[in-house]
Image (cartoon, rainbow, N blue to C red; front, side, top):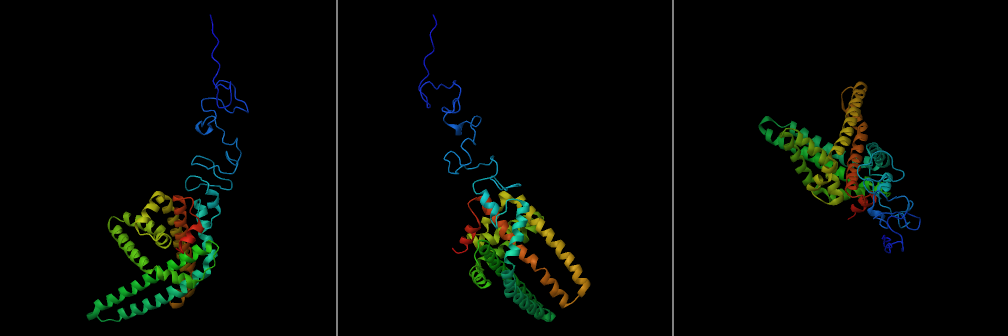
Length: 334
């Protein structure tokens, strides 16, 4: 005697909707994961809710294996996420190698005027003072050579401090102007003066560490140059943090950072070499030729500020996709 199978139990889609029944528009996909599409990667169609996600509000969060947001092209430095589309149009955050170069050039074209004023207001007087000190040191007799060496050290320290102040003020200008704010050289220099002691202290420590690194088979020195060039000024200016923060920020993307900085270094070297040959042919040697050469190499100086800020901003965004140019500009006013 045969018995009929028991009636299927009530399910999430109503009586009689057994897992073996064919799916319908009312019941949705069949199988043990019916009614819970997020737990069935093979049977769940992420597009059935449209571009807005299950809620229809656009709250579909992309994961590391999803396709990139609309408008993005080329490789992206990390998983695609909901902030990816914002990063693509952000003036300081690069999403690829070519985009990194584009953002660096954007800094140069957008902020060259205040950057030039900063250079005139800081570097030129610093170089004059250093030249006077160096001249005084060179005029010392052999009997007072120790005093001459000390004067030379003072001159080098002046140049170092002035360069740090110029870099800090330049970072302030670049960060503010990229966020749409107009800022002059005066507020930037005032801000840099307020950060002078941390910049000087951490800058001296970084220089010592790099020197020790080169003594230790060169490679550690190169590693430290990359880490500090990519993030030290940004960490001090934006985050008010110390030198240890630079390693946690750069190490996860060290190869990528090395490639970008190396490409800029090679470009700057080629530009400077060609410019030096041209200026040498026209002006020979002398004060005028040196002055013309220094003026024409200012774009490299300005671009180096862009390299530092764009690299740092991109590393911050890679670590936390919610970080944008506006975030960084707000951090400058803390």
